[in-house]
Figure (tube, rainbow over the protein chains, first blue to last red):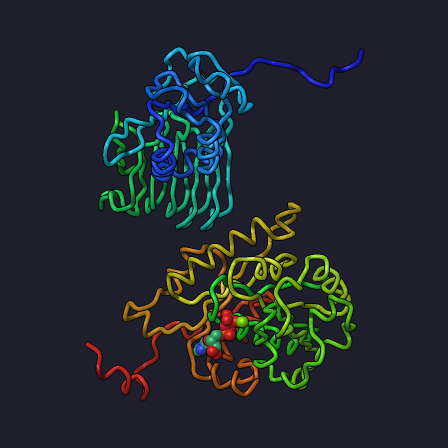
Length: 241
Length: 272
Ligand SMILES: Nc1ncnc2c1ncn2[C@@H]1O[C@H](COP(=O)(O)OP(=O)(O)O)[C@@H](O)[C@H]1O
Ligand SMILES: [Mg+2]
């Protein structure tokens, strides 16, 4: 019996959904870059579905190809449009991206801390039930300034220091058995139950599911002490271990 | 088996060339045939510190380009038996050092020498990456200040991700921390990081601590590696470091403020 060269299988993945409410080609690039800058690492290289379901603007005025360029400039990887209105279907087809039917509204917003609400652009992820066990990535050497480590689809364990200027990310929890002096982002694809644990909390930035705190928010009770970070409702809380 | 040791730092002016000259000389003094290569194409500092600048005819790039043989370019040190220098060219641009060319020269040097010491240029870009690419060991030269420590941390990340050993998944490059221009009085005054601070942040084994000293400047001006000055603390500290590099146990010296000397009284009078 010959083995087939490939299999075609169905699968579910977690993606970032960029939900467009209004499109102003002038304002869009800066709005987007501002949004991405507030959640660095979160969107880098992420597959993105652009949902036009709640688009308010005159459909014909939207330059979809230009919008894709702006997204790619910011490190996003658009893979499909969703709920494309009549007037835009030709344009959407021309971009070569897939066109998906309207979603079931299962998405959950990622709150990127904003100085003011930005109603034009909302980013949320689709939570898919995790079926398989989550793979854990274990790092035994120091994570140095300028390096970035990402545990995709699971937890990250670091048995060494994370330097200032280094960044560790995980879809699940992050455990650091050494000083955390850089940035740690857990639940980067929206898992609000993810936590960060570390032996020596001296982080530049910590984040769970898109909620961020900077180093100046770390109080004396946790600074340079063993600590954990968890999301309590909408509030990121850091507590001593 | 020849060992390739890169002397690197990220930041410039921290003492890489001074340390390359001292450590290369120290290895040769202890009977290991050694060549020091200047990777700082365009600046060419090593030959000055080794006092052989007037004997440079051909250089590293000439050898890579096949314009000279290794024998023509290698300069034999006049003071220390078994020590050679391969100078950098002052005129050519940095792209002259290709991976293929460097690899070929290193292979040839490995046949003849026990130790190949590579004096890296500053920065974390191409030139510095080329100097560390083939390394078996790295001496990371760090001054006790925040920006230098940060740059050392970056170069350590590059060593463990972009070196040949990392690329091929071999045993990682062996790391050594060398703290230079250490001034215990300024550490006590809180103006500099302590050795313990630097060790704690970089988390690699300490090879040595070289005190800040006028003797180093004098030595470079005379074109004599400071390790040859057995009376100078900096020279003694480099000697200890070479012994440790060769696996010997040596207690660290010159870490604490010296008792009130003439200079201290002179300089310290105005403080407070
Ligand atoms: N231990 C030291 N004490 C005082 N001056 C030093 C010391 N080490 C290096 N220097 C001085 O610092 C300057 C830069 O040193 P160099 O070895 O050329 O650094 P790099 O190769 O890292 O650029 C030189 O003027 C050198 O004499
Ligand atoms: Mg130099």
